[in-house]
Image 1 (tube, rainbow, N blue to C red):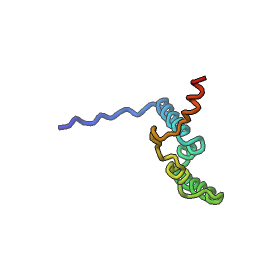
Image 2: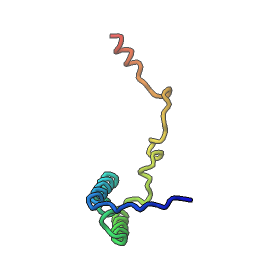
Image 3: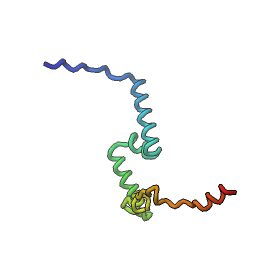
Image 4: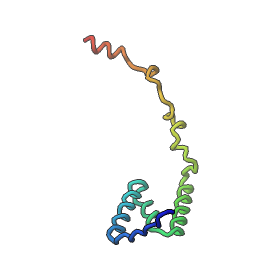
Length: 99
């Protein structure tokens, strides 16, 4: 038979305040000040209406709905070059070393 679960004491007000501070700092680093405010200080209804407004504003200003700007393959950054195919200018190196 299993031991009964022990109930933890609720955290103190100071500990809760510190946890909220850590959570806010994380959100600011990860998402920026504005979205940290949206995520932590708005009700779910306010948050959803704010995000709808943000999407409408982006669409009004011509921001594409696709996230293609973040795809590395389309920007030519997804291909890895092999070391043997890199173009080194060895002529300049040889000329400068022979002087």
